[in-house]
Amino acid sequence: MDVVPWPEELVERYRRAGHWQGRPLGELLRERAREHPDAPALLSDGLSWSYAELDERGDRLAAGLVDLGVRPGDRVVVQLPNIPEILPLLIALFRLGALPVLGLPAYRASEAVHLCRSTDAVAYVVPDTDPDTGFDYRELAAEVRAKAPSLRHVLVAGEPGLYTPLREVDAAPRPLPAPAAGDPAVLLVSGGTTGLPKLIPRTHDDYFYNLRASAEVCGLHERSVYLAVLPIGHNFPLACPGVLGVLHAGGTVALCPSPSPETAFAAIERFRATVTAVVPPLAALWSQAVRWSAADIGSLELVQVGGARLSPDAARLIGPALGCELQQVFGMAEGLLSYTRRGDDAETVATTQGFPLSPDDEIRVVDAAGEDVPPGAVGNLLTRGPYTLRGYYRAPEHNLRAFTADGYYRTGDLVRLTAEGRLVVEGREKDLVNRGGDKISADELQNHLRAHPAVLDAAVVPVPDLYLGERTCACLLLRDGHDEAPDLTAFLHDRGLATYKIPDVVRIFDAFPLTSVGKVDKRELARAVTPKTDATA
Ligand code: J2J
Image (cartoon, rainbow, N blue to C red; front, side):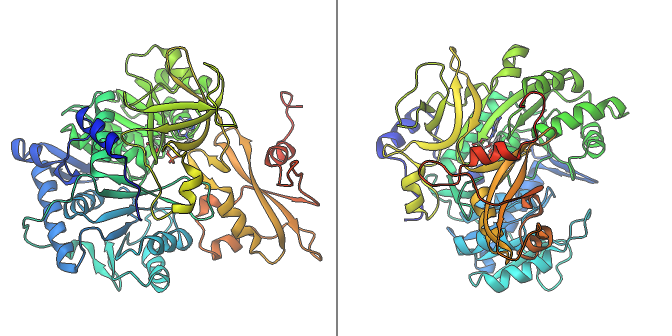
């Protein structure tokens, strides 16, 4: 089975509560486009599309994709940066019932091939080049195509090279049968802990609820302008509430081509952006840079910060520096979202990650034996609810470990609940590095490192970093005859790994510390590679 459904009694409950409304995501813009066709839906450099225009582009592209042979239920890997084309494409796929598989622009062959192969994707959509680095996605597509036999089409936004130009996937709009609201609408990539990232099926019903409830909590309305800074392929800027949430609210999406303060501040000024979402290192950078910037960012009302731990000290600076409200977001592509609420006092916003989004989010905080911890104690967070997955895509074995028998998702995060029921993230048990919001699975990276001819064994652990929160340390045992750290950068590049996954630090060991059951003791290893400061000495 590809996806795991919710049990019938929960389906009933979520419907009765009005969370699941039986509407496919493709309906997102319909009403607004009919009633306010000229309202601005999308702003980007030198470009403005009204609701009517975006709606029509979605319909034309959907018809064009059907003409190419894309069918309901087919998977289409989408690896686009924040360019206008991504929105009509997502809307078109939602409308025809094909599933976008959302990759990040930073992915290279290793990740992109995995996405295409593990989903038997029929099409792969890329930009032409990255204007900043010159990286050519058409060359990447050639490699992916050679290794993913299911691919029938490569579609290119921009100059197509040997492939099909996305702009020519265009046909007269025609009625298409709507997908069932209980079917998966999109596959998101897990931040995950496994050798190869798992995929997260999100249904029309659950994702619509996710973005609608998020838009409500953030107070979005028709005059809201959401600046997309993080890559839209990520759950946070996509639907929490993100670009889809602001379209649901009748507001405007503005696209920011780069998160650098100069570019982002200029975009906020030009588009009069009212809300945006960033990761903690960016929030800190912006809070510093604003002092030297002449841009007028006075339109900004709300900055959401999430994806990695935000220290209370850093949090306290953000609102005053940027002249707007801060919202902490603890979220995951698997589902559960926790938001501080608008109007919460500054200390609550600085020191907690707020309340779960839904009254039907079920939260358990448990010890290693799976027993509930006493109120207020730190433990493993388990959750289930109306927008949290019940199983990864095509992963029955993994699902046995990732979920409890009664369907709770084991988040791998360590949290505590305050007396009021707010969540505070205290750490995590899962084996990954959270590099300023970018997740690096230790298992995945270790497998690549072990393939190096000089490497006997590898263990990946986080090291603290002032700016990113964590950086990646590769601890290596070398084979006989090797005594120096090998050049991993070139090696991992050649294996097609995304650059952000390349270790920041490499340490050579004679042996790894082991736990009592003979596994590598990562906690001890992390301690061993953490530079001693006055506080830790
Ligand atoms: C500490 N850790 C956090 C936070 C996420 C909104 C916001 C973030 C994500 C996301 C998302 C954290 N403090 N405030 O999808 O919609 C870590 C946790 C979590 C993992 C999920 C969204 N916010 N984290 O980051 O799927 O460890 O989603 O389990 O990429 O990020 O990662 P991801």
